[in-house]
Image 1: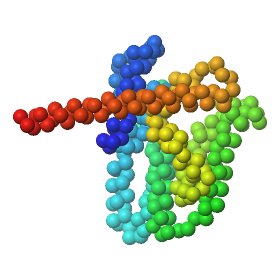
Image 2 (image 1 turned 90 degrees about the horizontal axis):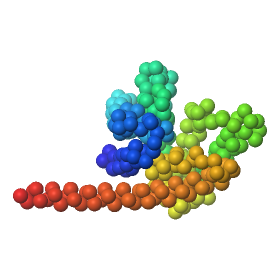
Image 3 (image 1 turned 90 degrees about the vertical axis):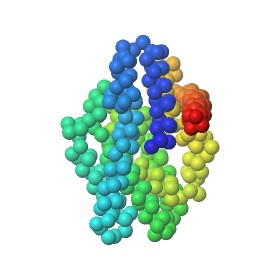
Image 4 (image 1 turned 45 degrees about the horizontal axis):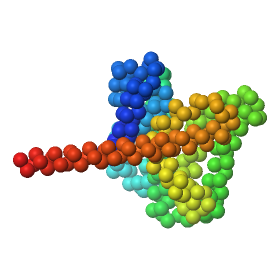
Length: 278
């Protein structure tokens, strides 16, 4: 939790303060900033961070439930974990709606998407079960599935679907079919993890992809306010420009905040030592 907090909170807090100081939008009052800081109400794309924080807070409870059930049922713990996670996922998706419990995000009542998190946990336990039983996965099949899903994710985007019919120009498959997309994403990550020697694994393990992974949180925060420009009409060109600028800003941001946090830690440690000496 300490590591996650140090990774998320400093850039998040700084971003909110900059929104207040540098933008003229009426929404960003000090009261609204404070509500966003404690994750009660998060604006625009920050609703996703709000969801993540609540999922982190609920994780110990989920693990405790899994451990209690495993003490009662005497079969392979990973099988039990998968079944329980998928069952809880279905229950929360069906019954834990925005009418029962909601988060204020992006100007609306957002249902807690813990069901997606639980599906992710289920695939994690499937991976552990396969490794425990030393089940052999044919590399060509795992790699082939990854390529098929990757191509499908591109072709199912609204940019490509709009070429078939303009009515799909605003069709976001992730919102229209969230369960299918979540399950397919889990399959992709599982196949990727099981076949580390495939070409697609080498691509996603490259230095640039690792670099994007390291700055992914900062990248997510800053990209939103760079994506709205209309100077470049072509989607792919706009994507490259936004990705390039966002990556540079996110990298500098991460380094600057990291150095500030490190200096803060050094000062705190020195002060603590002085107090102990006294």
